[in-house]
Image (tube, rainbow, N blue to C red):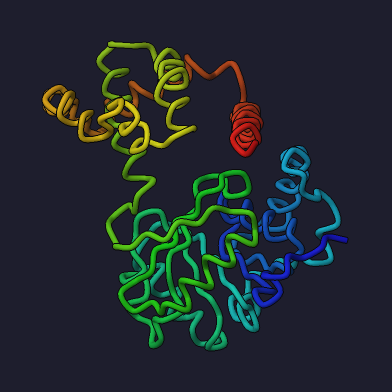
Length: 314
């Protein structure tokens, strides 16, 4: 039997809303740490999708040193929202990234929950202040945005809304830490929060360089892995910049390379995600990665990421 972390007892049971990629990954993490999980989704094939997921994820759980079997007694599936959320200590929402849908969903959830229920959304761009607009009590609602897949990746961005209580923020941080995650308190609401803003900025230039024929898609991957990716996996960008300035630190780095960086920013591409661009890049991606299935590539990614994490934790 899985032993539940002492800090998790008050967060049991958990309701996971949405059985997509993120929701299923969250549900797996919660179950592997001994929590009781209600998985809600109106999709008619919920049972089949859930069963297939838990079969496919066993090897990843083993690599994470987490239990991979015996979840059935603590997992319930439902398409009834009231049944899913009534009595839940935590709700982790993973619905479509659509503001009106999330607003209506949380307003409906509020009718069935206790005052202490912690309300978390995995939204990757929409702030809690907007999502909670139709709620009467906004104090327990905030963002708990993971990096995909949450089962593997340590980061969870904890982003309170304008009306979120300090207690709710602290509860979210305790909850995610007890699950082995590395939550970060984001102190100001901005579109896309932090991790995605950084990722999207770099992805825009990467896609531009590939689209312009400057570098092949798979070669760009190797360039990043063998330079920025390796360095930032150890230091992050800011400490990396500080060390890049030698004994003078970040100030020396900025004074020395500041003009070069500004010139580079001015030269970077402003890629537009129109149909022609999407078609060109999609064709190149199939040529670069089509030799393996998405599941095979994802498994390889997870194994490598976990190996990096194990090395970093030594």
